[in-house]
Length: 213
Image (cartoon, rainbow, N blue to C red; front, side):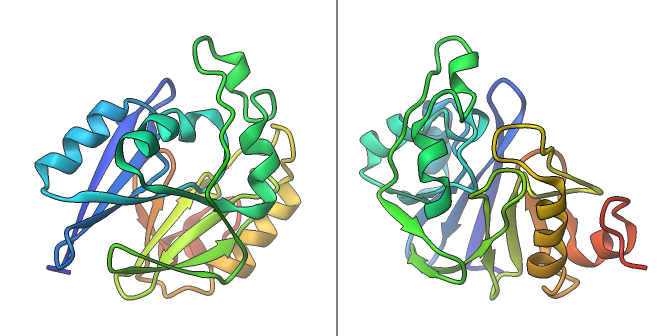
């Protein structure tokens, strides 16, 4: 994958993974889940020599959206999220930002996507996989050619997202993982919202929450 540069930044109050993905052919950058510290994200984009074209959100919780407004304002990049997450994203109580001093985020996305939709940005082709459970509008972004899955707080390295927040459901989350993520190729890299990376095949065999037997 000589054509791709991927930088993972761990940002914000609960160590959220923000991914800065550059297409070397176009110099375009897509940022997935800009959690906080817009300056650091912008500095990273400058260091790797690209221009931010789009901001993709896996869901609307405060720890994934802290830098969205500033980043969008300073770059002109559009913001994408699943349409079922629109209400949570705009509600500072539902997205939990009202509980964290100084944040209180109410955000409106530019693009509301649906399951299976293809997003062409910066020379990449992302497929939207609707994976409710952590929140009712959570989704993942799959890059088939590159073999990357940005899984947000749906699937972690040998774990899954919590479901005790508003609109969460463990039953629905596990169904989403089994039906939408486990059919992906085993060698697909899982790039989650927190913690380390893994592969789909490893999660199918070893994840104690959803291990296939």
